[in-house]
Image (tube, rainbow, N blue to C red; front, side):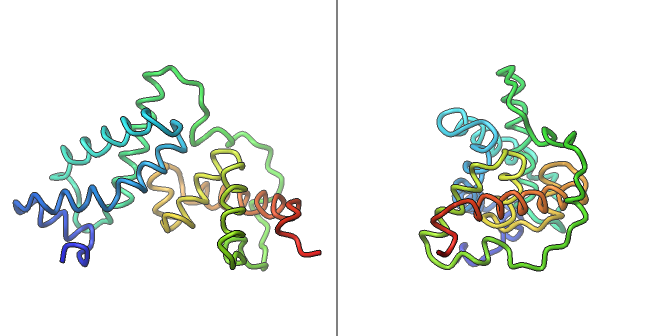
Length: 194
């Protein structure tokens, strides 16, 4: 029955004393949060530690959660902040969300491309796997936006909230990522018809 409930309903039940609801939330989001955090800190034990820390922070702050908002972006923002805290503690120089903000403005922000999106064109699982590998090969700032949008199915405003950026910045990164992805797809002989 709990699988039929929204995240926000589960939070409300937990706040009302139902401990099982919290377990359902954790089970529901562990894999997605782990994959998201792994993009920032790498896969393995570091990501597992950050995910655990993110869920602990979410649990401690659940009473402050606004039930009129969506839970998933709130949780992912906590996960992002936990990853940043981890990287600061590690004194890492891994570029995070704003790493490519200084790129030259090349007009890509203003292009309108009527062609179907690359992920909309993916019809076979093999093609989807190839596209996912190409997305992973993009600079982190672009791959993260595409993964949040297409794989985690966040809206652009939700991604802006998660990344703590303006909606215009996220839209710009999304467009640039699609342009870069289309270029990679056109260069990949497995995806281009003969």
